[in-house]
Image (cartoon, rainbow, N blue to C red; front, side, top):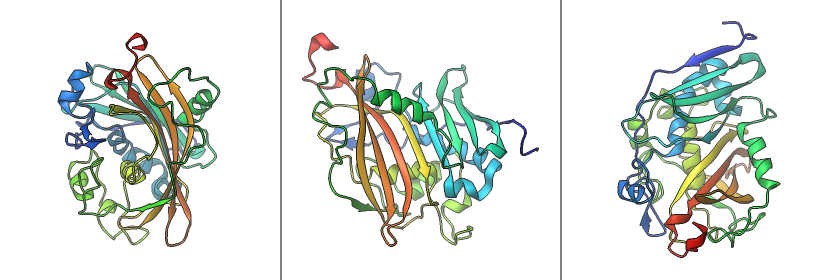
Length: 302
């Protein structure tokens, strides 16, 4: 393989698992529950979006090795939901020497699950760079669910959190890391053993998203209502992140928006290592809330 020639890597088709059937927030089940999904007119309870990130880890590692876990990023726009049992194929296209590549995941029928970028260059544009800028420059219009959320809002002081091997991760993620690794799409020995370049087990990219979400958003989103992920980016600044290490988590609202079916907000979560104060990672999440799931939504706006 020439390091300065464009290549395409394609993973075997996989059937990702849904571990969020019992997820709850605001005292109710989530979109990952089949009954809730049915009420919203969806084909079934979808796989949680970050689950798909694991499909790309072997592909990015094949290009960049350990750098992937130190300064890697994965940035994706989600197009189609996947229910358990459906097959998904991940692919990557790029020039390794440039430090960035395009990614895509599709179902067997060719429908796109996600598209985006992976990179080990901290300065490289990502899939969500342009999407966020468009959102920040667009008037969201009149809002009824995220109307009390303001750009610049933090949701409170920094909160400490960690992911441990055998401890469930709360009502949002009611599974332990070990349970996730038993079901993960692509497993690495580095995720649960100390025989790594850093001497400790490291977190998969999808579990960095779980870590970032553990304290809850603490933002005044009206409810009860059902949410979903629209866009997600996990960027390691000084990785990797470690199993059992405590991190301080802070948030900032960057933009608000809406489409025909959802209202949404963009939030950047910063993760700092508690022991050293070192900035280690950022998670950018564009999350939506189904208008039809909020009982007090004006009927003439649905």
